[in-house]
Image (cartoon, rainbow, N blue to C red; front, top):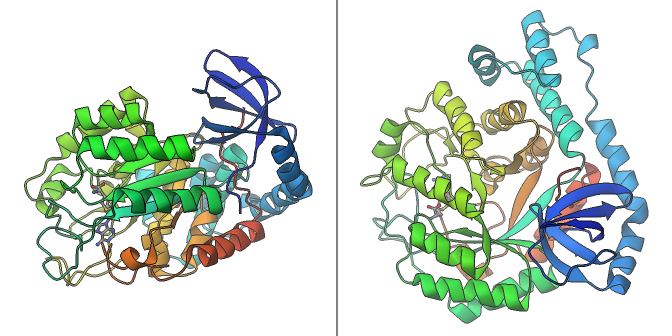
Length: 433
Ligand code: SAH
């Protein structure tokens, strides 16, 4: 199973390589010394991950050759947009027409889109976002694996099922060998080229231990490693970057400082943003976003969340629903509908046409099984598959009944690949040149 396709290096200029994928040129940043023109490489998130032999690359590419163009055709068909022929209301058509031409929408227009209720109107919004996704990102979809290495957490976030106050949860912390084994399976057996390591804010691992784990994964099984351990401090970020981590998944959760403080006792939004800013300066790819549907959150707050993600140079937006967990103070709050989240993804795509990938989160899939497909057809082009060992996966219960919580990796991969194929999406992950 393969989540990226190999490309051939055509040109090397300083730290950048130009890679050819069946005639399409893409750019990637390269940190590996041994790359030469003519080599075949895998890249993820705009970074070269590893080199593979020409024989291996050619046998993979032979399988992909026809499919590559067939998928593009399917995608193109599914993302056609014809606003001219619609009998929808004039204001909607005007706003979407502007959006489809990549003109900047006003705050009022964006809020109007977020507020749409009528099913037909919402469909047209989704189609416009899908059109923009196809126009700027083509049919590439990045698929990351995620390993949840520990559910210990020192924080008391009011929405989160693994918060320290939840005494009913059995805690686990994977050992170094278990993490290395899970990473090896994900990368070597399942073919992931990009792996997120996530945990609660767990003081049970030292930064040096985490650095050692990352180093060993990179040495044994090269991949793009993204970290999601919460606020580990600026020095921690630096050490893990030196160890080989290249992406930081850290949601700021809410851009509204008052709401942020309310749901994160003892924490401050500025500290979170400081981590994101410093990580960006260090060279990390930034994956960030927020929770949608929090009690007291307004549509303006959600719009500001999208703007803030963009301001943080997010390479990937991660917006998902808040799902009430029974063992948290927010247990009795109302859950949000899947369509509301997909609207956020679509508006995010309209705000950021060209830069950020947009993730469909597992939380969204948990709300509605069809939502993965729905999100991918509304501007999103990224997903994460959970490859945490099954015994532990159930215990990482940030919210209840998570989608895929008892599904083996192979089943998840097969159904994802089938879905991506039906939508004409290819698991490549580089921006068009
Ligand atoms: N310690 C890491 C990882 C936290 S868990 C960090 O602080 O970044 C990963 C994400 O789960 C959080 O960013 C949060 O947005 C999400 N999450 C937690 N509780 C949730 C809930 N009840 N519903 C939906 N998402 C939730």
